[in-house]
Amino acid sequence: MSNLIVVLNVLVVLGMVASAILAVHFEKLLSSVIALCITGVFAAAAFLLLHAPDVAISEAAVGAALTPLIFIVTLKKIRGGDDK
Image (cartoon, rainbow, N blue to C red; front, side, top):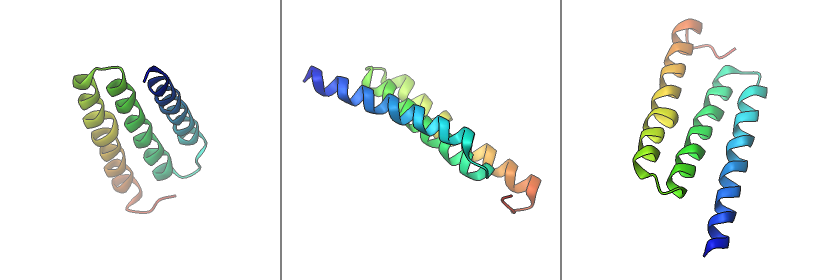
């Protein structure tokens, strides 16, 4: 059981690092925002694996839902619906 938790933690951290790197390297801003949203989902999963469900719920609400929503609305208003 302990090995399973370690493997899950390693996979979540690798996913978080990979999605953060992708968020930096994408050319289009909308793709970067989506990668940032995925990073928030991985962070929420990491908090859940660390037995902090209250922090995981907060991270899922803010990091994976609210922040990308604000970024997407801002991009649509600035660019007039055009992505690049």
